[in-house]
Amino acid sequence: MAVCVLFYDGIIFTYIRSSPGATFTVNSTVDAGDSTPGDGTCSNSALGKCTLRAAIMEANQSPGPHTIILPAGTYTLMLAGTGEDNSATGDLDIYTNVTITGAGGNRDGDPSLTIIDGAGVDRVFDINPALDPTGYNVAIEALTIRNGKAQDSIDSIGGESEEIRGTARPSPSITR
Image (cartoon, rainbow, N blue to C red; front, side, top):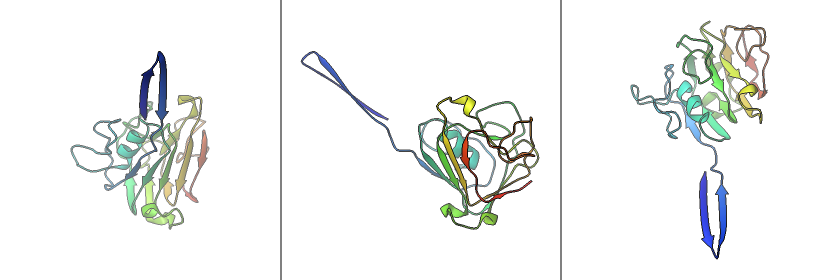
């Protein structure tokens, strides 16, 4: 966001311009968080790469809409933990406007080429509008979501049920 404040003849003029959302291209299937969420760079310092978890953590820290591009591959969530809402462990918490596109960014691509596997650790995605009452839009395209584990009776994407809290457009392939 750019803010410009001018003072002229006793009058304050303020101009605020929203920055467009970022595009994060994931280049590692490893499950690791972002080293510095909010700095605008999707990177895990130990890997020197952008992971799915790091991209979501980074996107959550600034206004969107954002785009996350996943190349073909299997992204297995391995960081055990539940009950937190910052994507540090367990599921991938989303609280921003974002489009996650598998198959290397081709929204009409084959969803079997890009897989997000919850490994039974937690649900896969938690899209919870209670975190932001103004709401947000999430699109999940051209990928398969599988092996999530429901945590409660109202679950999110990729658990034992596929009920979606919030506004989301899931891709054609959500499996149990």
